[in-house]
Image 1 (tube, rainbow, N blue to C red):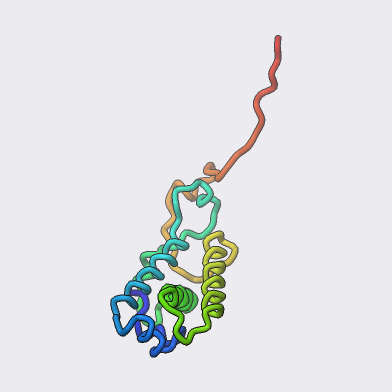
Image 2: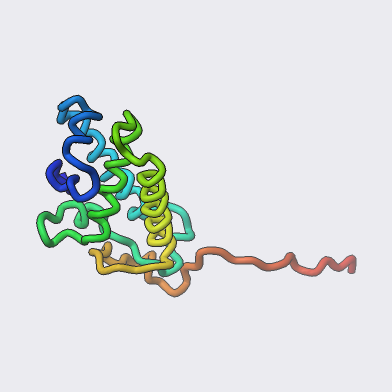
Length: 151
C-alpha cells in the first residue's frame, strides 16, 4: 500500500482510530485502499478529447508504487486526509467532524486543480504517444456551415 497504518498518526490520533474501528485493522486498510483509489482517479487520464490539450498526464501506477521518502509529500498527505475521512464516516468519537470535513474538501479541491492542470507538481508522467503529441490533434473545433446559395 502507498500509506501505512502507522503513518495515519500525522492526521488522526491512534486512540481515535482504535475507537472508531474497534481495533479492527481490516477497516483501516479498507479506508486506506479506498483513499488510494480515489486519489488515483484524479491523476489518471480518461478517453475524453479534452485530455489531449497539453496538460500533464501523470503515471498513477508509478506514483503509488513509490515507498518511503521517494513518495510525493503532498500526494501522501492528501491520501491520508481522505483515508481519515473514510474512517470518520463510521463514527464521530472525540473528533472535530467539521475540521476533518474541511480538510477533506480542501484535499479534493487541490486534486481537482491538479487534474485540470491549474497546478503542477513533480510527479512521474506517462510517456508521450504520437497521438497526444501530434500537432493536428485538437481537443475541439468549431465553424459554421457553408453559405447556402439557391443558384
